[in-house]
Image (cartoon, helix red, strand yellow):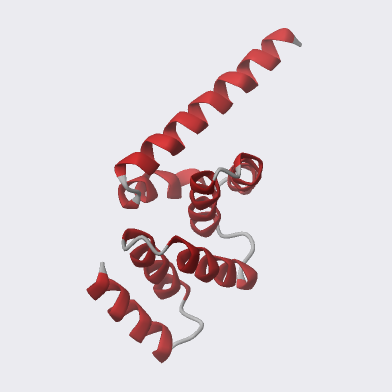
Length: 121
């Protein structure tokens, strides 16, 4: 992760508008345990393109990791509304095991709650 971070940082320095390098930087920071720095970098990337599902999904995980369930839910809803959920599966490979389980459990629980609410209606 440190080498990936250094390379991605260099790429960002060469082209500040390169979103893929910013995301790679954030992923490397996350892997190194620098969650706050990754969060800031993702927020900056999101400010430039607020409809990017890969950024929103990563931010959702960081919010869930911090215990901010409502914020995480809102970000996941936004990903679903955009309609580009294909980013979720590859991102799961980046997440650490405990965070992957957190995201899967949270999404599963939310899906069951939605189904239950619809059945009651």
